[in-house]
Length: 292
Image (tube, rainbow, N blue to C red; front, side, top):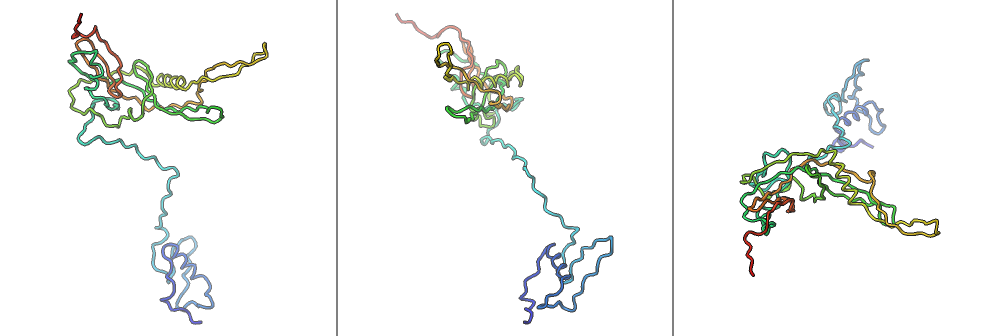
């Protein structure tokens, strides 16, 4: 059978492997059906002690193997994506640009704060903002399911006050420092930043005790009475152990508080969730009228 025309043959492989394949083919004995042309010569052997990347005369010209750079090996554990802060609304500026630490958003307007104490605090003549320092912790607690040996994992966020050491369960969305604030820069209020008085180690102990107290449960235990040959049921407190609780310190943040000055005292309203934190109010209503 006559050999197939050159145009009908498959194209030679390309790249480095094509060059190697072409070189290997030139050293292989010709097949009986398609003898090698007489004009093809074997390449000269490289002298001892030298390396020559010399392609076959019949193969197309490629760069030598010395210039070949393999693709970089991907990392087994890619670096985590950076945390991107939620951008503020167009034209909005941070309300406390000179604050030393991240500030939680203002979610309660001053009008709403005044409305909460309008029946007790009169003639509000001055308003200022206090920035209280708080520790924020995230926790996980493993608890046994009722009637089972499997665990349920409870999680949440805890705040430890940086001055009076009080602890509080907080909503992660409410205490997100990147959330938009209802107060923008350029407000007329005086800002006072308080001093941190509780170290991180002490705050972590307080947060741990808060989790233990929160997830302590009363269970019924059968206790044998050997003297009377009977059993009785006793209620006992079962608290999670340190192996069941995991705490993560998020950081120290500034929590804004509205301080309202009235004619008969002052009142502090949390600017994040609207709780009344403190009030020093003298006497009753000055505009009250007694009718006999």
